[in-house]
Image (cartoon, rainbow, N blue to C red; front, side):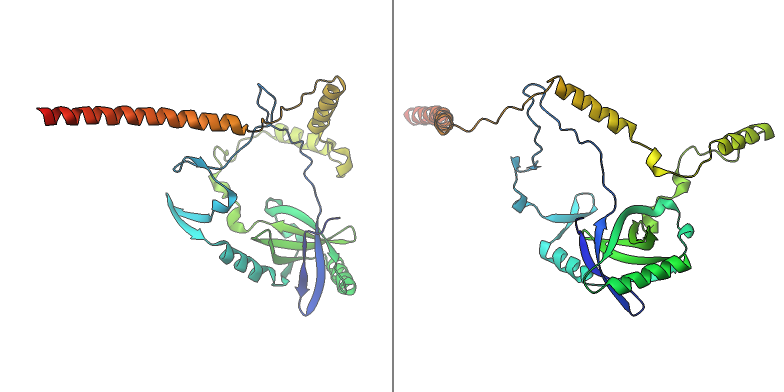
Length: 276
């Protein structure tokens, strides 16, 4: 399993060298966009609208727009130094709370935690202590240049870190439009709804739920491939130096002709003035 972060988790005076591994993966089927005419993949290029030309990565700087069209430019060196300063800090567990006290709206992404060299005993200690108390640890961590609030908990004999949103990242529920206030319901309506919920209530078994759309899409792709309903994108034409040179010469010649005509007209006009 790929290691995506190395560091130290601490609680009190206990330090645990650990590694993080992504606990989940996105299995969305990525579809490419092709040009309908030649079935070649569409390219997206970075272009400056003012200079009216394509620009290279080294010409791009990062900036924060603090007002409309007003920017503060941030040097790459400053960002790297800030990132390094934060990443060098140990991930300290700030508090211990009960899992049920955190609403699921806060949860973002899960990472398995494994002990790094020399961290096995301390890892086992934290795992056992969390399991016995039924608590989870709340901590902060820098992942991909972003400070994250996170919780550390036990999941099937493994420590798991789950990044969670900061409170100001969760939108105010009062802003949701058209939410009805208390509605008048008859006892029979409510009783019927509760009975239906009771009849459909089961223990949660994750394995019984499947992504039907992804399965159907894969089957459609495979069927088309077996029927040889496939296409190959055309290769990009390599630039012909001779053609490019001729085009450049012809354009230059046209520009020169235009300049000569204007110069000739100016000279004729000037000579006419002198004669008169």
